[in-house]
Length: 385
Image (cartoon, rainbow, N blue to C red; front, side):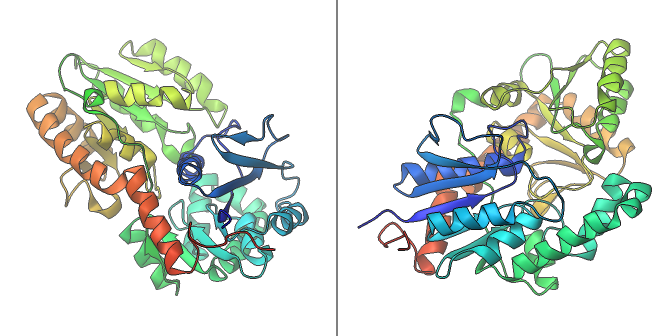
């Protein structure tokens, strides 16, 4: 009985300079499935396949860096799909790779698409978010390079056999567009009790993510400026994805002694920052299901978020504070920094929820169940001949 073969296709990989939530999600799922006996492969853009090509039980395959927004390595991807003939192929992007993966998968392959960001799976709502992110002038100047991949990605999603949403809000949005989906939460490795925040000592307010306009890091800098009277440290971590922010951060940290930028922290050290944090602040315009939220909840850290509230976890579940403007964000931060007992109470609820809903083993159990319902599992012959 051969191992079933599962193939993940994404634009980037954790071994590249891009280390976002989608890349972490792919790697957590990949390595856990490999540990459970699946034959796991990952395809992504990288200059060359690492040596050795098998990392933590997962076989890596390199696609050349994309040279055109209208091609996306379709022929190279087709060759790899034909060679590997996986039982299951999973796409966790929403671009041309979504289309090519779903349409080039060999006959008999179970095709799975998983949403990653807000408005994934849609056409006009997605373009609206892209316009907000890039600005109207750039959006209209390069309209075709935004419209074409989005249109093709939408076609790819419609060709999937199984669609995975990150939370009920995404599921409802997909349903409104005529796409049925199943909710599968993002996975995260559970942390031991000794890594849970005690909420003692000088508070640390953490901001984590890619530093670009979409995440609105300037709002966190402004929050730190407003809270400069508090005995608390404000810390930012993440890769600078738009060069202008290097000068912005340098100027801000010079003027505000309690604000610091610790750079792009390696993935194996990210947990240290969440373990030390007393609050996580999010200023992003929109998200899918932020992995930063899950990292914080696992460690008993309340979340204070501007505009992002997946599954209404901050309001209905009481796992932090939700704000719709900067004044309310500041008010929530001040309230929680002044009350360690309240932070501890919220953090305990958050940890209990995270361990129950996002534990890697639990999420992969659910994924294996969904695949088994569709005829593929560790008891099946997975590789296609």
